[in-house]
Length: 107
Image (cartoon, rainbow, N blue to C red):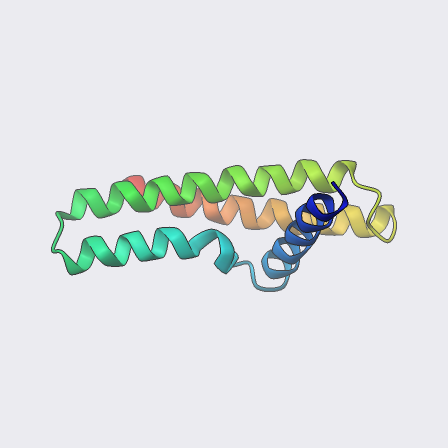
């Protein structure tokens, strides 16, 4: 059980670090979708199939980001409440940008 908890907490904090420092999707999240998208492109799949997969990926990233926000609100593994508020604010900004990306992708 301890190993699973350490893995879960470690992955969450690694993802938080990537997102807050770069605003980008963590590689561990995007790698499976990037590979599928590349495969579709190499096979010459219709653009609507590629867009559908990109949309699915963006929705998954947003769901994971919301999970991180919930985790951050509940965990006691943050330095202090000010840090929690700052990181939550950064995540909100990133979420808004990703939602805009999703909106553009769906248009």
